[in-house]
Length: 545
Image (cartoon, rainbow, N blue to C red; front, side):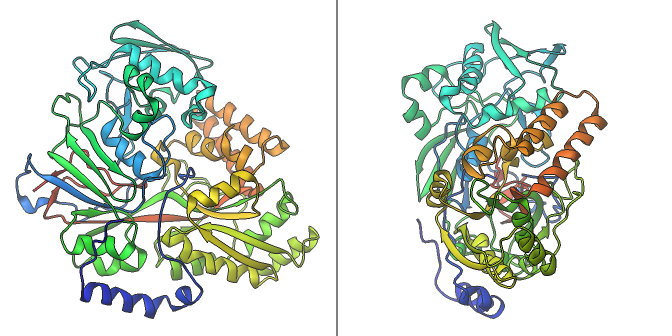
């Protein structure tokens, strides 16, 4: 990790604020912020006010400038877009790769990227898309229909264990009509098809097949920026791909992303001018930075969830899961640990999401109800080890969860550690309860996608909360499939609402709080920059002044 901390007052000021405001959390043993983002990437509604985003102070963009950014998360996975789920590589891939269709990183609206237009519907189960003429990969080779077919079929191949396949249950086959046209055959009508294929990034077949591991470490795409170098705990270096001819050209000559997971170092790198923007502003610093930089907090799907090992007693009983939710003092979590930068979850979706539905079961702070549910389940005197990741804001919340559970007679032990190590325990089944961040909205914002990430036929219900095969799991997937095939928007929404009610009642994996995502930047040095409603930073359309 690069230590970007300047000496002197900024660090001392921040230390004083933390001692005064967060004495409880520090004495409770909240650990330092580290770290890797997990396979739980855990997404979003529209951004909040972007007041103050007029950038560059009227100066003209500098086409020869270099963007310097402070990134919170280390490289926890590779870059291959078929399997990459780490926060930092996914954000990097936004600049390196294109899909036929991509989502605007700020508005989350779909637009034609490598395709000349949005896919054209031939009939209910057939679509066609034409490739942008002259598009090239970063090795200089042309993007062809064969590359598109390869990019989709390798995801559909079960042996590749792609994370994206769970988002494409409707897709039957992909074929090349000619060198620049691709045809998609669907298993059933899927109204969300044109925007959903944004989850598939187009890769060069020859490069991937020649050396998949090398491609994962140093990807080759067709996007506006070429990745030059990536060092796990240090930096990612990009340069403009001058042959790019698509809709989102690079407006800077280069980018250096500094991987600075230390909160103090990241904040001071912005204040000192060493970087021009940082993600994941520590909640304690949001107010203080507003006088020195432009800062905005955007409502997001991103959440902290509780996940139970449903194959282990007594957590196979929903009453125990519900009890531990009712015991939580979420108001204290939001006000004390998050400095107001969050909202208690009243649904699987955050209130800013266009499909928000208040769940039939809403977990308020009700200690009496929590105790009664434990007694009914025969789980009085329960002892729990709570697994959490050491991501800064999560580690700050963990002591409050422990305090809430201890207060109803549940003896709680905290196990806080690096996310990769914690998920090894989860995947091995050696855990009881986990509290972790989740944000699948980096892949898309439609409700079907957000629900399928955790509740579809993927790794989460099978290897993690171990719910697969239960009657309720079968019911959830049935509702999702019915909604996916419905051409009627209102009928689809009704089915999604039923799904949300069911997973809220079951609470096998369910959010405690939806967070706001604070971002800070120097508006005098960047033009066109806007904060995202997802984890990460985007510099598409951004230049230095």
